[in-house]
Image (tube, rainbow, N blue to C red):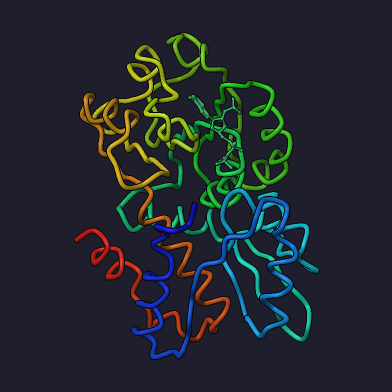
Length: 274
Ligand code: ATR
């Protein structure tokens, strides 16, 4: 549901900061109705849109051309029209990386654990690898999906000399299997929506130390995953900064990169938090 989406407010702030005349609203098609709704939007003069779950794959299918990061991400969160052609990009991973860097994380040479292997996880793997961490371990409840992601991103990992590996959830509980702890643990699962954490007590005890940083992609509440990290003295963040930063990238795609210095995503984030 997008009725409580913060995106209209975020884009209104960017438009205000950069003095752009822009209207950003909400559209919620029926399941199966994405392509028709998007085509009508562009036919009526709409210039661009963000797309969220469950339509990111429909958006990818609709686009006439994709950026390479959207291809790798396997999903599209930003569409725009130019000379009658619809383009698709994915700004989620870049948004996550910028939020992490803005919070003072050193990603280069970091040991990263990514929990989850759905669309949200896949969308951020490319930009994380491009930061050249020491290792990126992907763990998912259904192991095969994590293995698939390791295969898809193997070439990019080799290019940036990152050890990219998958682990099962039971591996995470076994101190002998992975070199613990992690500098950064990202929760890209939907478990928080059900008030659950993907990490068992034993896994949390292995992966977190006080110097760890736990990043929850959801926002608006302190999830069980964040609580597990806090209990072990780790720093935590929710995903509100990622939301603002991915929006900033989309805004610059639509309105022009020349506005990059006119918008201030961190100020918008601070306003949202207050
Ligand atoms: P999204 O596009 O938001 O990533 P998704 O493709 O449905 O949505 O993926 C949801 C992710 O959350 C998956 O990694 C899922 O694990 P499975 O692949 O094993 O289904 C994970 N997930 C959801 N609920 C979970 C829970 N309670 N514990 C652990 N992982 C969970």
